[in-house]
Length: 258
Ligand code: SAM
Image (cartoon, rainbow, N blue to C red; front, side, top):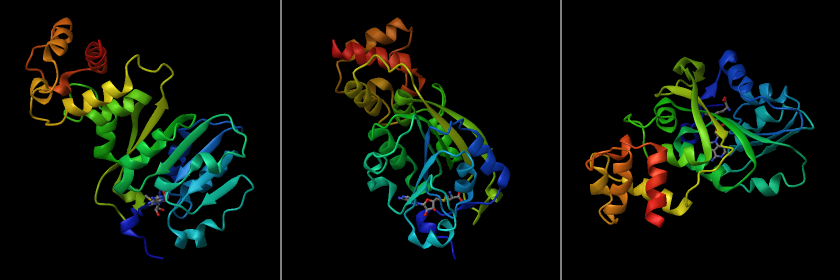
C-alpha cells in the first residue's frame, strides 16, 4: 500500500530510532500512553512492550490492515482525526496515573496537534515527538538565537522543551524532503507567576515583525511601562524581542497589568 503524502506518511524503518523514542519515556504499567499517528504500527509494537494502557489515534482507516494485527487488551486504536478527537471522553472509563504522549507526527500539522493537546488540559507528564528538525530547533531554542520566537515562549509556559536527537532521512520510508529530530516536553511543575492572557498577547505582539525592534512591535502599548523593565535588566530601548528571556517578558507582562 502506497504511503499518503497528504497525510504526512513517512514510516519509521530504523529499529534503533524506534527503540530510542520508546526508551525516552519512563512509564510504569499504571500509566497511559497516547500515540498520535501509529501508521503501520512500527512504534506501537515497541510501546506495547511497556504493558500499560495504550490509546492510538490514526486518521487513515486503510492502515487497519496493519494495525488490526496488533493484539493486546491494553491497546485501543481509534480511527479519528486527532484534532477533532475528544480524548478526555475516550479515556474517561479507564484508570491511570500519568499520561505520556508519543508520536512520529504528521509534519503538516505539528503545531496544531501540540496546541490541541495543550488546550485539552489533560494531566500530561511528558510528550515525545518526532518533528521536522527546523521546527524542533524553534520549539527548543534559547533567547538570543534566531530560532527563538513566540511559539518557543508559548510552549515554555507549559513545558520544558529539549531536543533529544537528530534522525536522518534514511530512517524513514518514503524518505522525507526535510531533516527530523526528536523532542521532549516535560510538564513544568511550577506555573509561571503571570497573567496568561496578558503574557500570550505580549509575546505574540512582540514577535509580530521579526526585524523590527520591540518598541516598534509594541506601538499600541504604554512603552514607559515596558521601558521600566528594560532598564531594570540594563537592556537598551532599541532591543529586539529575540533578545529577551522568559523572565523579562514575564516581568513586562506583570508591569503592564499594574
Ligand atoms: N508512527 C508511524 C511510524 O512512525 O512509522 C507513522 C508516522 S507518520 C509520520 C504519521 C501518521 O499520522 C500517519 O500514519 C498518518 O496517517 C497519521 N495522521 C496524519 N494526520 C492525522 C490526524 N489528523 N490524526 C491522526 N493521525 C494522523
